[in-house]
Amino acid sequence: MNSTVLKYLLLCILSIFLNELLKKTVCLDKLLYNSLSEQLTSIQIEKIFEFQEKWQWINYIFLPILILIKTSIIATIIYIGLFLSNKNLKFNVILNIVLKAEFIFLLVPIFKMIWFYFFQTNYTLEDIQYFYPLSALNITGYKGLETWFIYPFQVLNLFELIYIIYLGFEIGKVTHTNTDSGLKIVGLSYVPSLLLWVATVMFFTLNYA
Image (cartoon, rainbow, N blue to C red; front, side):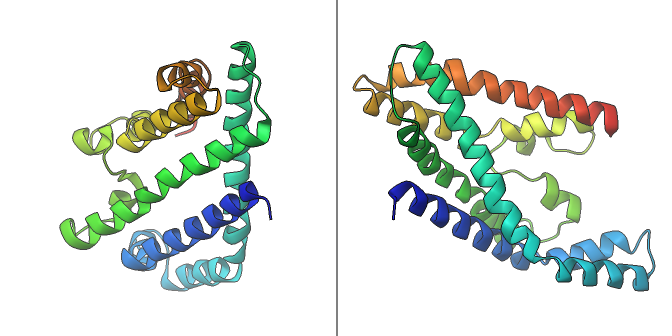
């Protein structure tokens, strides 16, 4: 089997496993029940949970599709950046690099589990929802912050920085240049696209929140 396909499958399996483990660790169902009980009756909540349990398998399909779309878009953006820099690489090589880089973000649910299990043992559903380890949001806190500022403060995190540096390192290696050259390509392709995405999310949050 192709190594790129193997990396993709492993990434999907680990992502699903860690997300499910995180739900169990923070008792997400209990938090959700407590949150819904403020607005709905117990019968209505039970129906929601029954529906959720019945269609839970969709999550196992949706997450791999989401990962495939994300990695393919990022690989395409970097491919265009390389092309504009007069460097020719096969798309599969770039996709392989992006898939390897995505494993960095698997540390996020692990850090979340450690934080809420050992340090912040008293928490709400909102705490789980907005917490992003080693991010700017952890410094400012989400309470009192405008809703449309939350996502960009989450994106501004150490994992994203490591992700960008790793992409630059790998691009520099496969183009037989150096990390600085690779970072320049990533900085002119992936980073502006990330900023555009963040701005888009902020726009929709501001208009529909």
